[in-house]
Image (cartoon, rainbow, N blue to C red; front, side, top):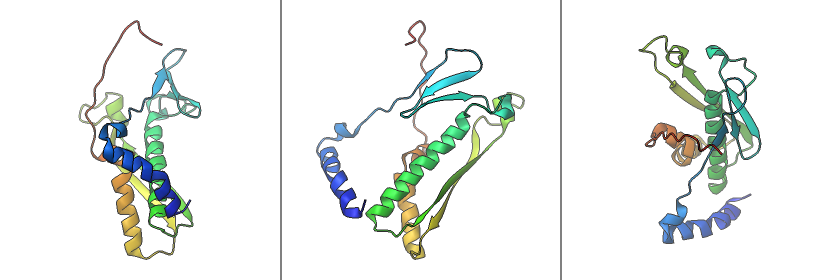
Length: 172
């Protein structure tokens, strides 16, 4: 896909959202099934069923997906797709590359063994290893726009209001 094809693809959507802001609001959903044995949650993705379980550092076997890994994978996926879209829009010469994320967890917090240890990532780092001969100012622009438009990056950088609700007897 080139920049003109991307613009042609997105132009009607942009026009629609400019005319009707409500049309741009979409609620994404995720669902997990708690039935079954073991400490696992079966998460339905758009492509497959993923069984998430405990990380080995909290007693898991390592045979199930770790939700912390899944969070980093979502960041890598979103940043990668966003970077490629921005590169296309900018006519940026990108021969390929790798997107990596790593994050630091102190499992004392998750296991409740140290009250001063946080639960969750203390730091997350995102890396791009790009195959390009573009000048540094174009690379900087690509990265700046990728950071600006990556939904997962921005969600982590500026956390949304969260709500937790519980219903009983209504599974399904």
